[in-house]
Image (cartoon, rainbow, N blue to C red; front, side, top):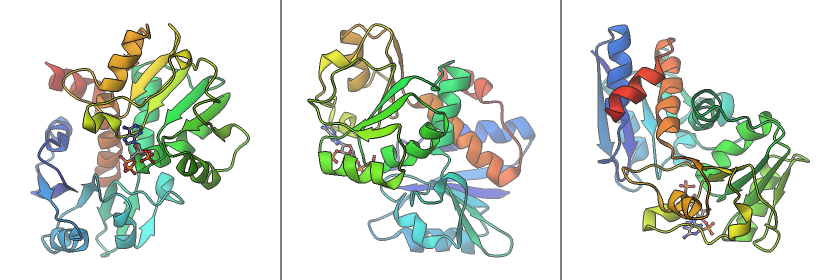
Length: 268
Ligand code: ATR
C-alpha cells in the first residue's frame, strides 16, 4: 500500500484525500492518503516520520508552505526561486524533492476548464502573501498585457514585484486602480474572516472574469462582492485544487488523472 499525506494546520477541511483516492482508482493504484495536523514548529518532525514510515511523498498546506523549503534537498520547477512548496517527493535514494503545483493548477483550471485566455489580457492579482507569490511567475509566462498587484499593505506588493521583474508587472495602490480588468484573481486570505478585500467597484465590468483562489460550499465573499457588481463570470479555487493535486499525482506516479471526471464525481 502506497502511503501519502497532507500536512497542515488546520487540516480537517482538506479534500485532498478524496481527490487522490479518486485519481488512484482511475489507475488501480492502492494508496492511503491521510490528513496530518501538524503543530506549530512541528513540520520537520512530521515529514521525518512520514519518510520513516516509507511514504511516497506528501502535500504541504497552510501555514507550512514556506517552512517546507528547508526540508528539501532540491527544489524543482515552479518552486525554484519562489520558496513556497506544496508537494514533497520522497525519492528512493532518500532525497527529498520540493515542488509547487499550485500555479500550474491555477493556469490549467483557467485555460482548460474555464476556457479563459490570459495572453494579452489585463490581470489584477489581489494579495501579496504566499498564495499570490506562488502564482506570479506562471501568470507572467502566459504573457498577459499587464499583471497588476494590489495588496492591503502596499510595501508587500512592492516586495512581491521585485521577486519577478517584468515590464508587464506592477504594484498598484488603491488610487491607481482606475480601470476595469479582464481577469481579477483574489489571492488574499480575507475570505477566511468572511470578508472581501476593500476594493473600488470601478475595477469590475460585466466582462471581468473573477477568480478566487479559495473555495467554499457557498460563494466566497469576494465572488459575492463581484456578483453584486455585475460580474457574470466567476469561479472559485475548487478547480485549481483538483488540478494542483493532479500535477502532484503526476510527480509521484508519472500518470495524468482525468480531472474532469473527478470534478463531476465530487460535485455530484
Ligand atoms: P497566504 O499564504 O494564504 O497567502 P499570507 O502569506 O498570510 O497567507 O498572506 C495573506 C494575504 O491576504 C496578504 O496579502 C494579506 O494582506 P496584508 O499583507 O496586508 O496582510 C491579505 N489579507 C488578509 N486579510 C485581508 C483583508 N481583510 N483584506 C485585504 N487583504 C487581506
